[in-house]
Image (cartoon, one colour):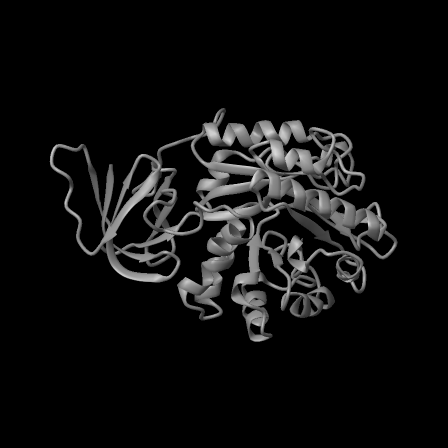
Length: 386
C-alpha cells in the first residue's frame, strides 16, 4: 500500500486536504485522516504542500510513429515511456494517421501492449485517414467488438487535401459499424475525425447525421483550433457535439492556431458545455504546413507534454480554477471515451495520480498504483531508454 498524506486533492473537483490510500492498482480510500493499517506494509509519503491531480489522459497520440508527408525521412519515431511520464500522462489512445498505407495497425496494437507492460495504460483506434480504412479483422466494428485494446476508429480525415473525400453514405456506414462494434464490445465506438483546413469543415458531419439516425456525439472531431474559421464553427458544433483541441501544434503555428488554453475559455464563454471539450497532443504525429498550392513548406513533430502545458496555462494565463482546467485532459476524456476507471481520483478508480508543487513541477507520479516518479526522480524507464 501507499499512503499520501495531506495533499490538496483535485479529483478533478476540489476535495480539500485529504489522505489518499492506494493498494494494488486502485485508490481504496480518501479521508481527512487515514492511519496505516497495523501489520500491513505501507509506504507513507508526506505531501502537505502538494496538489494531487488525476493522471492526464492524452486521447490522440501516434504512439508507433506517423508522418511521412515530406518523404521517407520525415517519418516520425515511436513514443517512449518517458514522454508520457514527463507530461503527467498515465493513459494514451494510440492511432495511425496520414499513413495508413505503409504503417500498420498491428504495430500500433503491439505498442499499446508494450506500454501496458511498462506500467501505464493504453488503448487504440482502428483505421486511419483513408476510407475504406485499414482494419485488423476486416471490419472496424469487429475490431472494436473483439479486440480488447480497440475502442473506436480514427483518425478519419475530412475537409483536407489528404483526405480520401469519402461520400457521406460511406462515412455513415463507417460510423454505424463503429457504433455497433462499440455496443457489442462495451466500448465507446466513437469516430475520431481529422478536421482539415477546408472551409465549412463540419459540413460532412452535419450531413451524415441528417441522413441517418446517428448523433453528432458519435463523432469526435479533432484539430478544431487549427485556424480561426474552423474554431468559430466549432463553437456552434460544440453545443451538441464534442470538440477536441490539438495542443502540440500551437508553438509551431501561432499565426494560424488558436492557443488551446485560450480556446477552452472562449468555447465555454460561447456556451459550449464544459464536458464537451477535450485537449489531446497529436503527439509523435507530424505537423506539416502546406502553401496554397499544396506544397510542403515545413514539418514539425508534437509531444504529449503539450497538454500539460496547456492545462497549466489555463490556470496561470487564463485565470481558470485548476479543477476546471483539468476537465479537458482528465474526466472529460474518460467520459467521452468510456474509460470508466480513469480521469478521476475516487475509491475504486485506477490509482493514476500526479502530485504537483506550486510551480506545477511533477514531484510524484503513480500509474496503476506503481510509483513512476518520486521526489522528482524517474523510477521507471521504458525499454531501450538510457
